[in-house]
Length: 341
Image 1: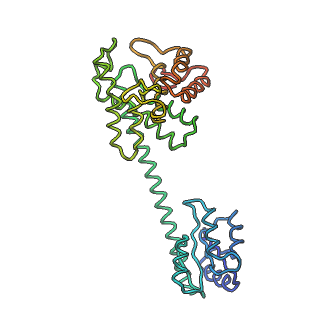
Image 2 (image 1 turned 180 degrees about the vertical axis):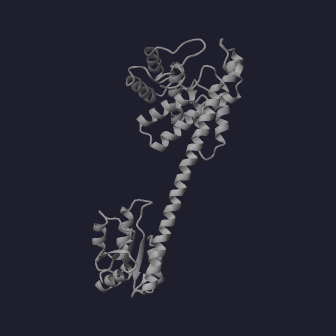
Image 3 (image 1 turned 120 degrees about the vertical axis):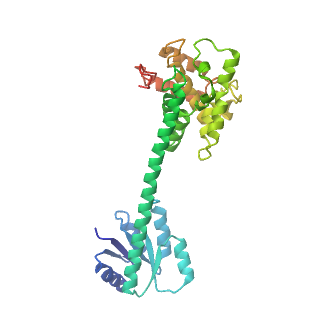
């Protein structure tokens, strides 16, 4: 497909000259006589390059460029080369500061015009190709990172005979609560990772304590209570995502301040941790344990209601209750295979 160039100049002779030179290079050329016409034309057309004269009556090239920048989508900007008969460094500096790719002097030297247009088109294609490559690699890395996190979460869950799939379900519920609360897609993805890793500190808890079928002694329960601190320290080393550790360290805090490990209360508990706390408790009640089966739905609902304002943030508990109301068949629980249905 031929490259499409728009030439904007109030001088008809310049429009004809540019059109003649570029057309001979098998380029498609559209001629416009003002910045106003250009802005209107771009509402329904997307050329590959704009050659824009600076000195024009009414709206000059610089004002036109400023208006272009205001309406163009970041990453999809149409490259602009300014046309000028002036030999002024100040004009060039101003034009480059506005985002122009290059300057071409008038009257046109055909070879210079062709070379600079081709060079700009090739440069823009290279930039976009690199951007696409970076985006693809980023997606691949994110998929790889998620796979690693999911594998780690499964390894953590495997320490406990009775928590198969727990971290994945907590992550799922937390993301759904966050979505309903109004989190952006990026924030939802982040809290999903936080949910997957909220129990990472259990790596440091002996299997014999985690899997003990009987009531825990005070010493054993103290070992369990250390896991949020351990998890927070492990994830706190990942400086690329500073919030990741919040879910691990504070998902056992309570709104009334009687939780652990730091006894935080109310808004002092990070919002994401308050969300994960609700999701974690919900899954604990809707999963099998060594001493009981999955709790009936009405019991779970009653526990969430009772815990509002004391154990749970009322806002997020209400969202979880709404999710339960939208699940009449009670599918949001551990399945026979130990996975979320």
